[in-house]
Length: 375
Image (cartoon, rainbow, N blue to C red; front, side):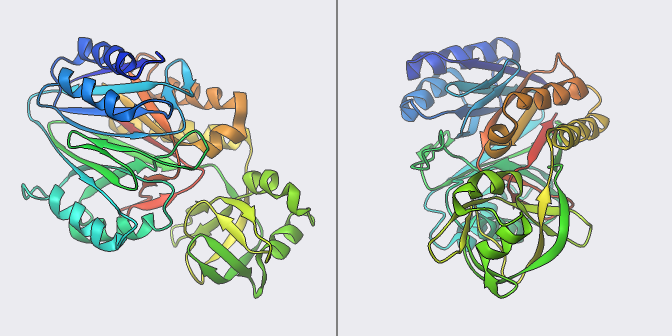
């Protein structure tokens, strides 16, 4: 197996796409699967068209995000390409549009499409529109169609924080409000790890009234009143800052926490979260620091490296909220990952709007989390 990575910051969409893909192909040769990560500010169809001309019969999967993660740091505007070649590697892709319409059914459709060759194990990469409210339903449908023998990983697509439109790619074309998915299997040893570094603080809270992304009540009281009291009775205009530093965490039976990121207080004192929040869930306000977040990212990378002794590539799907929170320290997190994976290992990724991965078997949609892939 060979893997090549290239990226470009050229202003012109076609020039950026060509520079990125040719750099990757110099190392990999003709690929079996191509990953494409972009940012807004480009004509996305132009990028895809020039890359498809260069990669031959390769399958392609990708996403537009809040920034491209490279060995030089984060590019807030750019194009990144990872090409993987090798005998015995097989790849299938699926581009599913309008996943907000009957999301559970759309998840089942994607799962059945990826299983059309009757394979029963492998790696599933998923890049849904990160702005829709029901990604978890898509994942449940897909998982029920495919089962527990697969390794699920990916991240939500987005933009440069304008929250207007997202893009998903396969060789079939470009979608918005969709899901791009790839199934990779055969002679390729891929392992993943996901985590965040947040810890619970204080007493648990019960979500007593919620609809989608909006929580109306904790413990039978207005959501902001309860959150504010736990944080020292903060003012509403301070909530974006405090909420970013103190997300909500929902525990599972294994002691892991699913993070949900609060972003806005409404006039009725309800709180909007980045993505959907489960009904009747018990959770905690979480705390963390640059140190704990970096340490967790490092431990994830080291865990992956234990399974893949000599990685050919590394992909990182890291939440844009972590990037904004950590500032300059985000590069410390990336450096900690690379030191464990190997500083000479080709590395690429993007800033995600939600992350996909499983603490054990079942894929979940996370916030403020890091997902690392090596193969």
